[in-house]
Length: 453
Image: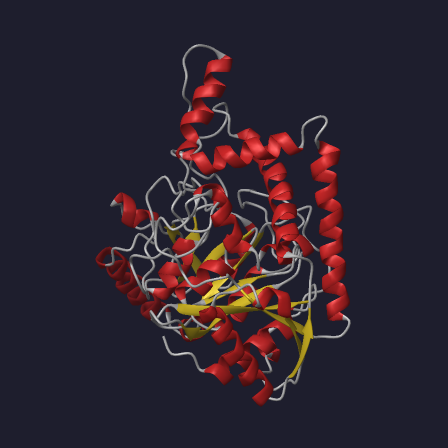
């Protein structure tokens, strides 16, 4: 598949041919990366620019946008998200709805109401989640690039499982306007691409201040792509207690990356952070609390499907019980519990205090280091059905969620393969709004590793 950088040089006739060829490839492919593949419908399009795949929780005018949930089937978006408007200004266009975990709640794209997406490298394994469709489409060569959303690793983890690049910007760097909220203080939209430079290009296009988003950071922005420098020598911290919990395949890939970075002239220092069990507990209290508030609007009155014919109470009960899947219901219930009278102080307030501790720990490390290198997930992509309980699924996010809690930028890229040929992904983490250093370090590692798909 042509890269985004190459596509930006194409004439209009060549872009038209590219779109037609891509449309044909999507029809011939059967991994379920796009909702249109799972529903046997024509690919959704908007505009005539360079085609970019769009996660199904990002509003595109006149598209059905469902967050892969039964409760929103039939909802047609009346407007574009800001990121879609930014794409169009740069000559790019929304092209295809990518499959996802319902309301972005999951780590495997198995909870979608449309069915599961297959990992293009091994169809018996999950593509990750919740942006599994976006990552699988790019990895399978049926998307030039894609947009995903990241609440606790939902861009970086599927990118790692599928062997592509996934980047989560600093909180507030990319507008959330028009993106269906899961957890408002954690969500960020970001690029999933074939390489680091493409990620930088797409990041530059979608980022910037937006007065329509009250959480958008009103600061000066400079494009990172023109100043990319893989030769900049950096101090990179390694979180030893994170690495020790990972599988042998992840540890092997991590060691390979560290050696490559040292040979490239970077300085490696060793640090430790808060236990991951405390990070997991904090994340799922904060995220579910915010989700219970955000998803209250889906009640059958204003959006999507309406069920129940025996009065208001019956409508609420039937709409939500039939519309929301099991994992979403579970998280809404948990969120309502931690916000309820008598438990708010015991759980939610404590979680916010630990969140502050996590941010302080990152700040202390960045006083000595330019970047942090960390695993993305404890293992490579597991097989479908491997998660026997929700807790097992939650633990697959132990290395990614703290970054969202602290509001920091991070990027995942493939560095190795396990014994089954599945990609091993690692992530760089940078200080807030220091995306330039993040991309410089990632490009340096990409060149040093020279990962072969």
